[in-house]
Structure formats: C-alpha cells, structure tokens
Length: 369
Ligand SMILES: [Fe+2]
Image 1 (tube, rainbow, N blue to C red):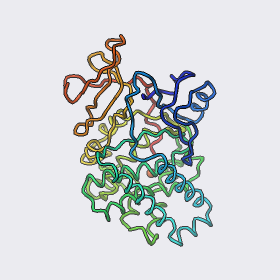
Image 2 (image 1 turned 135 degrees about the vertical axis):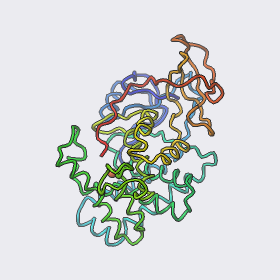
Image 3 (image 1 turned 60 degrees about the vertical axis):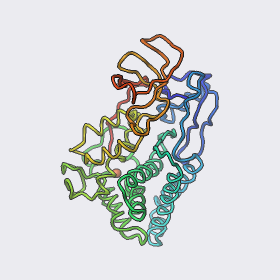
C-alpha cells in the first residue's frame, strides 16, 4: 500500500485502509474501489491523504499500534463524554460524581494495555479520520503519544497513568469555548484568541476537583501551552518551572495538531511537522523531549512516497527500529524512469537522504491554539 493525496486520486483506485468518522465509525472500508462520488466525499470530509493498494506496493504493509476496533471504542466513549459535557447540567453532574476522571483513567489504561502488547514497539499512527473528528481523535492520539513518551522516559506505571489520563484530558476546557471560535476558518481576533486561551485554566478547574484525577494530571491542562522561552500561556512560565508533564505534552500536542486534517488547514506531512518541532526547539519545546519524541515515534509513515537526493523515488517500506529517521525504501523509479521495484536500506546507504515527498505540500501553520 502507499499513501496518496486525495487531490491525486482517480476513480478505480482501491482503498488500503478505512476512513473513519468522528465517532470512530468506518465511513469507507478497506478494499473499496473509489468512484468519483467517493473522491468528492473524501474532499468534503476534509481528508488530505488516504492509503491505496496497488500491485507495486502490495508487500508494503502498515501495522497500526492500536487496532481499529479499540480505536473505535475509545473514540466513541470520548465522544459520548464530550457530548454530555457540552450540556451544562450534565457536565456539572459528571464533574460532581467523578465520572469524567473515572472514564478517562479507564480509557487511558485500555490504550496503555494495547501498546504493551506490541513487542517490537514502534509507534505507528496511520488511521485516517475526517476533520470533524479532530477533538476526539486528538484526545486519543495525545494519550497514545503520552504513553509512548512516558514509558520511554522511564515513568512508573502509576506516574504513566497520571500523565496519560491528564494528557487525554488536556483540552477538556475547550468544551466551554464557543465552537464558532474554535472552528473559525480564518485568523482569530485578539479577543477571540484570548477566549481560546482560557481553555487551559477552565480545564484545570474542571480536573483539579475530580476525585480520581491527581492534581499533577490537572497540570497537563493548565501547562500544555507554556513554552520554555516563557512566551506561552496562561502564566508565561519558562524552562524547568514548567512541570515536566507540560513540557513533554507540548511536543505531541503540536505535532498531532499539525498532522491532522482541520477545517482551517490541511494536514502537514509527518516529516514536515517534525521540522517544525526542530525549528522551535529551545524556544517553544524542551530539546530533551523533542529528542525523546524523535527516538520513539516513527515519523516516516510506511507507504509514504518519497524522493531521494540521488534521483531515486519510491515508498517507505519498513522501519529501522534502531534508526527511525532512516527507513527501508521500496525504490520504483530512478531519475524519473520506472525500474523493477527493489529495496534500499537508508541505514546502510548513508550518503542518500530523503529530500521530498510526492504528496502535495500543505499550508501548515495556521491555527495552533
Ligand atoms: Fe490546548
């Protein structure tokens, strides 16, 4: 299978991975033959790229770190909680009874147990979602990244559950912000920007009184927009005065926002998002946690079409566990001429680098609230 920009799809191509709706439901199944109608629907859903199956890349297989069934259950439960929370009376009841904290502690534990089942443990996140799924998917994805990074950083299980539960709930305060502002396609006014920024304090206040949520977990909501240079919000904390949870969380929070389909921007490709992280290391992000991310998350998704510095083109075929930035490629073209596909291991051939990707360039940086 290989990834392809939705703009480049033509009818007759076969989907290699399903496309999900906001509640985790499958909108288009794996193996569906695409028609013009489906392609138009994908565009309308805000989907930027999909995986297709073709003869040349049939051996390129992507194994998700989380099964679609579990992702569907977790997303469905997140959605139910969020929808209940958007009614003020029901929200008060959920907060008072401690249901919010209990539910998310359980959801994070399910994700944690799922990741533990994978012995090779390379974190791949490849499922495609419509852009209206963002709020729920972002909660699940950031929980997954938190789990991977927390484990790699040596957190005990107890601390990992505190971190991961807080990570899944980091944006819960957005439920109190008007969706018209949150989903506004254009730039925000100063007043709107300040309104969005309130989600950190609001989320903290929601979580800090939850009996099953540790105060330190509530700090995930309060501190995930602080920056190491002190230019973040809400308090403008800098360096080590930002809690470790906040400094770790800033990295996957931004990465996931950049690589997701949103109403106001197309998804950035994973390696482009990583370049953004690098460019902002030491100002926005703590360098040790950007490095931790880099060591533990596979940023070149399997199936990504790439161009190399020596004129070869192909797709990412496999990951080198010890060297995530130098995957094994399946080369299909040399200097624009098709060749019989063969593998090229970039961990062995160090003078060749990945210089580009065939998918359309995205307009990445709008709206990182
Ligand atoms: Fe946020």
